[in-house]
Length: 318
Ligand code: TXA
Ligand code: MG
Image (cartoon, rainbow, N blue to C red):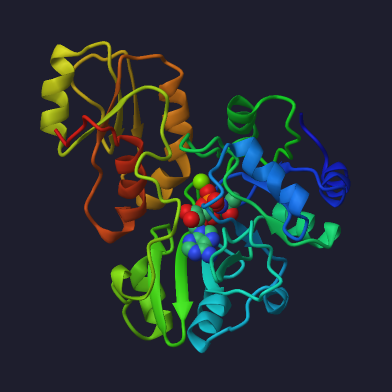
């Protein structure tokens, strides 16, 4: 159900969930200080309780209500990348609801750049916990229609048009004067390192990976096969014409049930990635053949999402 900003503000203040546009993906928002509202997020998404949520703030000043420490590296990153597609994981104040942080001693915080998300936070006067607005392990939504297809037409959604970044935020945890990259996004590791003034610590040293980074994630319903290169994809396609394909840069030679070619520029490809997978999923092809895109660092977040989309117990790279 499409709702206006004013209607969404009222619903959030009453402890309801509302899907909102952000620059990365649509989020399923609720009052981060209301335990019943947080419960509704987990129930709507069918998300396991051990997977913590990102709290969305209006500005960096609000951070003091959530984090117990704001180390200089985190301050510099916030200054450089907020508002925008960066999430900072910081030590949490004790009063942060255990359900929001899944009983971790840390909390994930982000100041989004999307004007509607910002207005919603400001006008409601709330910090908004918001995971991506999809069922657990399914494809993330980048339009209001994706949200309705995944979570049902009864869910209140603010339609803010297609998301521009198109892939979930980069997640960085900061502890003292060290930092770690917990999830790739379109803000690159090298950009973070340049602002932090030092490289990331390897993941196994400080903390476990971001909980809930399930291997099968961001998945269409149609089985996906990931190919190392164009040649192996085209060979396979020749004997499997009922397949659909997701390609990068140039179209495929063999005739297929359907295919989408994404741009050879990583930012452009990211902004269209989930919409392309949603569209291919609706073709009800036998399978979706996915080309592994370019290997430059700018493509790491896209590669990460494609590997998760294609992850199956029986799948290896072809
Ligand atoms: O771009 C985004 O980040 C979107 C939009 C809506 O802001 N949100 C999003 O939320 O992707 P979600 O819930 O789908 O992914 C959040 C990730 C999860 O992998 C979770 O494990 C991690 O953030 N996370 C949250 N709190 C954490 C914490 N305290 N420590 C480590 N990881 C955390
Ligand atoms: Mg998600």
